Length: 305
Image (cartoon, rainbow, N blue to C red; front, side):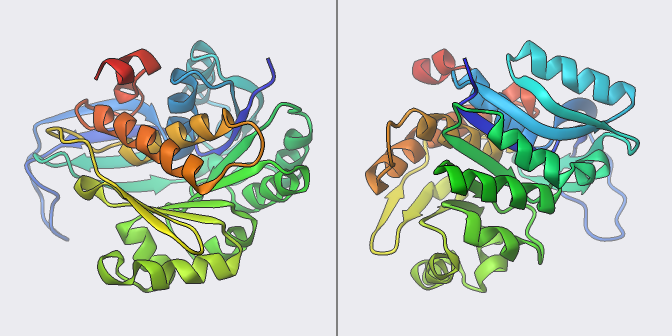
């Protein structure tokens, strides 16, 4: 089958430290344990969608190194199409993650090969995937490549989903090409200058004016908000005890894309709200587990939760 979901993907090797809390600037803190796992927002989103039953393709770049070999094999093992995964002279991307005793994380990413995705190749890949329904992007991967892929998707009537992480000045290039924008509270504030607690509608209006159709703001333990130009809905979080929030947002985006790809024809706001309800259940499973890829559930695990 031709993939229904394509992810213009950041692909990182995560180096994770468990610590009692996130250290203050200049502070040295003793941690509990360390681990090394495959991650990156795009890779997490692609694997999340694949484990939930979607046919997924990755458009991305890894290094000509052992990490790149390992990531490619891991994606193949998940059933992800890697025909558009390229190799770069730059090293495979890296992330340093600290997770505190409450499961809250702090992440620093070094893009490496993720910054080397050729824009023309990303655009061409969209044309070579005839069954596409949804294209996902983030700001960890080369923005020019994501921009070209989104523009090609828009020309074909394929839904585009932008996860605005990590926010930078280049986000504005993608907003006019994004049907769905997914931001957490911090990212929403950085994008719009508005606090979601009181400025959700006002801040979202800026994103609608830029060209977006739906705005989804994830609110941690408070669930998420879904807005279109004239309405809003709140989806409560599933109550669980979180041990690690790594990949929670990515699993939400991957689950959202998987569900939206199943919708025949043009999605409605009701469809987006329903997809977010499912995505919230997926994220609730993820935060009860440690790590990125190891925490991502199958569809059966979500239905049994």
